[in-house]
Image (cartoon, rainbow, N blue to C red; front, side, top):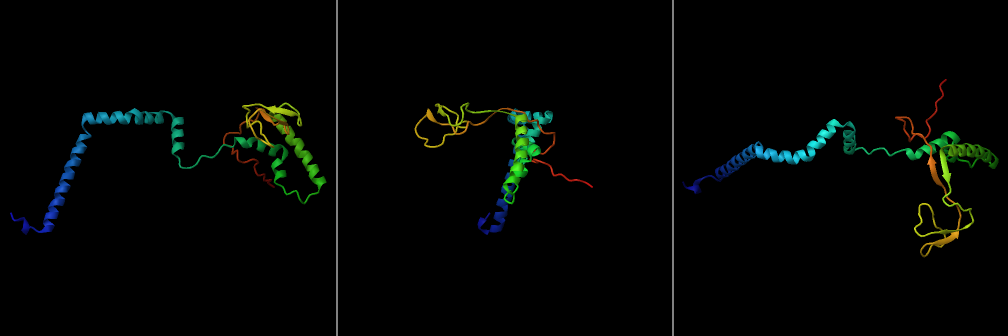
Length: 204
């Protein structure tokens, strides 16, 4: 056969057909290999060691499935509102937020003083009813105190000329407060803790 007389397009078609046939044979062989008992056993080992256990855990344990679904949920979870419970209490009992967010500049000192007296009384009672507080340092303000080495910086804040290494000696400006006991009940199920006080609508 004289290859020089064969049309180049024909040669190209033959090559493409050969490649297609080879790919089909390769795919057929691969598909058959996945039905081989030994290959399936290997796949089951790698898949089943973790995947099957996770699948069984999710189908049998609703709580675990919920946690996995939350992890895969693209929406960011809402932050906890536990830290707002005391603020909500002070607002409910003493209207603290209303006072702090009110523009008091138009009022005279007598008007502000009268309002502060009631707010102070109600908020003080709310704190005493729900918190047990104790001073961080037992000394009276103005006393000379010593801050030892290894002190807790979250409990004692140094001010002034802070140089060198502890122990330090200085004047107590404020004894600090530490919560010894917190008595705040959890809100009812389903209540939005980010609502510090619900809007009040009076119906006719």
